[in-house]
Structures are given as structure tokens and as C-alpha cells.
Length: 248
Ligand SMILES: [Zn+2]
Image (tube, rainbow, N blue to C red):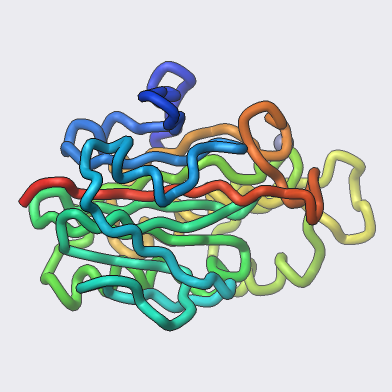
């Protein structure tokens, strides 16, 4: 996994919009970002992107494996992933510890935004998102670029059998994904690295590891930057992450 260092991703502030951007998406000319705590509301992102007429498309998230294609306007059905080939459509997801993932095939102008918590990953939502890009637009998986946003890190994501069982079932090698609990046995609990899990799933789907970039920041450990469900409980404010192709 190409883990982005502090120098390789950056916080871009443009007017009122602060977001974390990654170089590969910038180089592809895609307006994108992983939002921050208390950041600009998503309906104000298009203007900040210099595309005030762009449509914002989000959906009710249900921790599923459901990925919808956005062609015109908002999907009415709940889902956890959105894909579009349309320009001027800002698609995005909300998170507060779950992993936001942006996918793109810049050459074909297809982009995706996925809400990938452990439940979504257990149902292989990233595998399915890549498979949909392949099936609908004949995109070879090796031309997909992925950016993994800030989420709860392995430092803080303590889990039990509910998470470990489906995870172990899914992969033959969980090294780097399931990590020992710092307190030893801890009643069968372990630490899970959601980004490493996502990388395994994307690589399984055919995305080259070197085209997967992760922002290595834990939402729970950085209260000044991020909301965290585990830290803030119901007081959390979900953060918006999205991608928008402004031309074509
Ligand atoms: Zn942490």
C-alpha cells in the first residue's frame, strides 16, 4: 500500500472549504476531498469548487454493500456507494470513523464515492464498486485509482468476534489487518486496520496496490481535525467526502 506521508496529502483551504486532497486525484484534474470536522456543508462545495451549477448527490447510508449508478439527479434509494460518469455531479458520502473511499478512472471520467465501514467491508462493498465500474464502462480494474480517507485507525479500532469472524472468513491472510490487542488476550478482542482491509479488498478486485493511496490519520486521535463516533458518541458531526469532475 502506498501510504501517503504527511507531505504527500495536504489540507487545502480555499475560501471556506478545507479538505484533505491527494496528489493522484489532483493530477487527474478531479475536484475532490475528505472533509474535516465542522467543515463546509456539502451543498456549498460546488461553489467552492468553482462549479456552482454542479449537482450534489448523496444518499441515505445503511452500512450495506449497495452501490448505485448516478445518471441524473439524486438516487432515491438508500445505498453506501455512488458511481457516476457525469461531469458536474458531486457525489459523496458521510463518515465519522468509517472509511470514506474515492475511486476514479480518470481516462473514462468515471468516479465513485464509497462509505466503507466494517459492515460494508464485510459485505465486500469495494469489490462490488470496482466490479460495477468494470461491468458498466468496461474499465479494467488495473486502471482504477483509489484514495482512502481518514478513519478510525488500528490504534483505536478495538473489535470483537462480531467483526473478526467475517473478516477472517473473507481473507486468507489477515496479516496487517488484524493486529494484537495492546493488552494481550483482552477477552478475544483485537485491533483492526480498516484501511489495510480496504487495500486487500481492492487488490483482490484487481486494483494495483501502487494506485491505492491512504491518508494515514486516525479520526479518533485527531479531535481538532475530525469527528469520531467512538470518541464523540452521538454528539458527532459526520464529515463529507466527495468527488466532482467539472469538465467533459
Ligand atoms: Zn487512534
